[in-house]
Length: 493
Image (spheres, rainbow, N blue to C red):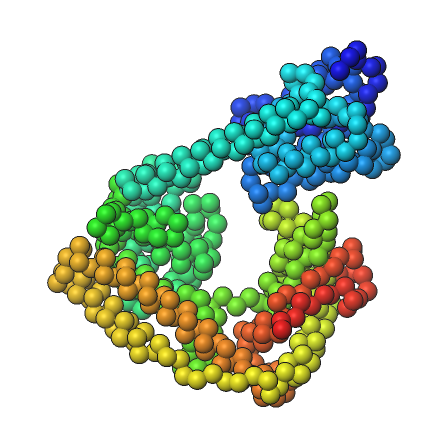
């Protein structure tokens, strides 16, 4: 490139992964390498970009500083107007591990003639097709290595599961630090609770007893209904384990027995599994309506979406959550989760006012559709579901009485479980459609305002009319004057 010039403005880019951080090499070390390279080449660093602990290999990960750097390169200057004529990175694989990202970077850098690029080894001419091709090839190799490591990790995890070996993480409640030996007092509580569930005692009653006795989780916290249910439903109690949501089984379909001490028998856990499985997701009630065990406490939770744009121009799109705010009229706020929880934390609006506006918009839209909805006929799968459910119950009873072997029970039960799950999901969809159609064709506004619709039914009607509502940010949370123009409903056809 000829003799180094005394002042050539360039930017420095560093990325540090979790693995690198564990090795003790921080962002400061990477910037130091870049600074030494700049001095050696006679270039001047005018800005530093860093994406800390953000993988360059995953498609869904947004690296804000990388995206900002690409924009500045293409523009030829920083947001404050300071010119930029090149980039220094520690190494190509710290810059990009996806071919698309590398190509966008090269396009931005070479948008004008004379741009410079260097890593710790020295300067490189990205205007040369050979150099660009080698860089792209290096990105592909790097991506292949990442995938190899991910596959090895998954195989190792699966192999440990199939051998019944405990994996990393904190000790489970009921076992000691080695995850194999029982912790007597905790195990006794689990055994007692599990057998009471089988006997018909409610989870609420068991939870109240545990709280009164000050039984704590391994983190020292009071038990919640969800955490207690998950502890009771964990196949670890009988010596089994799940991997990716399925029981780990051998070639014959029989669950693999782990190396830890069990708390209850496999037959007892299967009874618990049958009880809890019947309660998962929406439930069809006797009157033909649908109840949802997981109905949120607020009308538009999960329906509202954050519309704040990010550095790349795309909106955040995270579901807004409700939070109690006594200082607001209505007492609650819909807000975007923090960055640590997967959102941007940049949008917050008065919950009661949004509920009121969207309710009126939805009711008006549904009233327009009256007469256009036809109630469907009776669901055709009722007979098959009833037959399979009775057959599965008899099979379980026969196995629990040792009338059939494991080798006969587990494969057949697994096949029936899969089909029953499909049928239940189909029935729920069918009945939900009927329920929605009935609500829409009647006096929906009268029933809504009279209090005859519960929260689950109201949410079902809203989802009948809307895909989502995008909430555009105004700043200041719920304290700014309410502006309905900043709510963008996405209507269903």
